[in-house]
Image 1 (cartoon, rainbow, N blue to C red):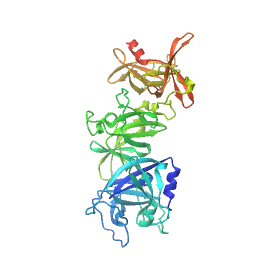
Image 2: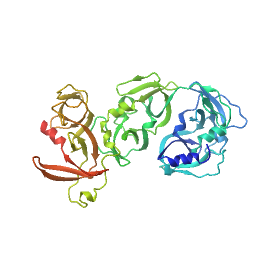
Image 3: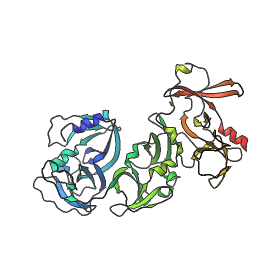
Image 4: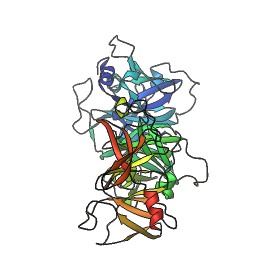
Amino acid sequence: MVAGQTGAMAAAAERVDLVLVEIGAVLVAVPVQHVVHGLPWPQRLAPLPRRDSAACGVFEYQGQQLAMLDLARWLALGGAPRSHAYPRALIVRDAGLTVAFAVDAVRGLQKFGADAITQLSHDDNAEELFHSVARCADGDVANLLDIGRLMALARTWSADAGATAVATGASAPAAATRQRQRCALIAGRGCQIAFPVTDLMAVIDAPPLARIQSALSEGVAQWRGRHVPVTSIAKCLPALALAPVALAAPPLLAVFERDGLALGILVEQVPVIGTVAAGAAVTADDAGVSAITDDGGGLVQLVDMDALYARFPERVLSHAASIALGSPLSARLGGASTSPTNACSHIVFDAGGMASTPIDGIEAVLPLPPLAAGATHMAWRGAALALRDLRAAAGHQAPARGTVIVAQGAAAPVGFIVDAVHALVQARAGRLSRLSLPGQGVVELLSTESASGAVSYSTRDLGQLARAAN
């Protein structure tokens, strides 16, 4: 890899995913696509005598012999004098070539905008490992490690079958490797919890949460101008939670996204990047969690993200193309209108037409389970939940798919079946008005903005309907 190639790739990308590690006094950033595993220092490191090399030994990983590099043998990295083994190592791969290097700590994955990457060295010196830096959100500066140069300079690596050697014309012996899945790993109760790293978008300090009553939800967070439903390990995976729910809330929010819809999970620590064996023998539970063992025999609980997302239909509230949230209405809605704003957030739903309901009194948003034809109740929280079908096809041949909005009634909750939930309009982000319509009397409207312009929804207070139903 020539000098500037990493910086050029960074500049061309909208987002750069980097794994941050500490070596002595230096913070090092490694592109996540090159990271195989962050692991404790090997228990057995055999000598690897080399006259002019950073290799400090060799160890076994998944049946493959890997070289361990100590970058301090090449570079002055500061920190205290090294009188003992490093605590950890990071395994990296490029074009089928794999090597490990010693680190003091793995901070975890962070995402950077392209404007946070700056190339500082432009000498095209193939013997230099760092030419660009990444500006971290906390103000730290990380040095971007050029993995291609590392491989070429070390000339010490293990190769997968068919891999092309770096800077030589010879091919290295092939080693049998299992297909791996890169994951974000956090500590669970007697195990590690693994999430596919492709879905992990950000790890941030936990922001204040707007309340939404639901058995699985902690609330709703603002993230990149969107409303993201938030859960926690204690609520969505209680058997794996480190501590009782009564303890202090986790300090960090991990945001996962797929198909434009996001879900936040409160976590105790920044996830580290590792891999688990794809296709390994697993035991899955009803929550979509598979129990496997890692390379050291430890227990890893691999989360099936499809199953996890299916438990949170309120993810639709986070749609990137959803209602414009938090900004004042434009002149199209009357400019300095004196119409009152919505005092609380409103859920926008489709039930034979678009409508909104105040979020106050809403207890949950659930996927509609399979029900017998004409069913008037469904099981919820150990009791029978009365249902009212608001869909256009209700009373005829109701479609099998739908969403249940549970509202608290005077005596018992009521579940309203709608076609879908589409968005959440933030409190004070819309205007309320009344309109007299022939045959319908006075209708209250909520007006706000969408990506395509001003929109209005008739308001249907499901909480009021639930209280009337009791």
